[in-house]
Length: 241
Image 1: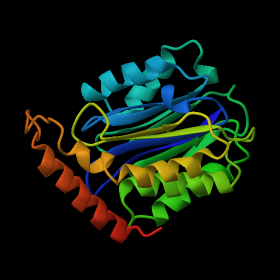
Image 2: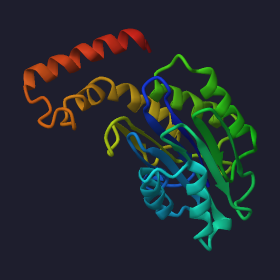
Image 3: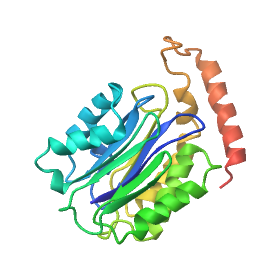
């Protein structure tokens, strides 16, 4: 009862998932990922182990198609599941069980896959993909949002709308960008508001956190605050409301 986009940004190598649904807290169930590894969305009658086991297989070097085939083969509920993923090389694979409620299916392109079930029609995933491919000049996070907004305009979840979530991974196993709208009358509109708010401090602050290359991170409070302020000023100039 969800649709989602999973993608790899060819400019930065970042990996992302954006999902939306007429269900509470879609972000608690659907998106999985890790930096330099891949991203997975498990939906319909979601199986969280598709995310857990799929990530392990991605880390072990299996291809997207090998993982989807193995996950489906081992799950007796496969007919009711939908899962799609992008591996670290940008290869996509999808499984949509025959018992998923119509409309259900997927479309894809280089480094991107869009899949959904219980949708208004195939135009939802088609318009989501079309908008993503047309928005190549945008920052990766906004590109994902623009794509899902196009899918919503095409009808989205045929039951209505309630929640959405975006997660992006860069270098680390934890996300560098992670926003959820769990219950809202217009969740994608609220996500766009949070996206703009995130770039006022949350996004630049992530660069001050510990990393493998800089295990201590940056702890000079005044310097970090100045960096965040400078970032927000430059970002706002590029993204006028």
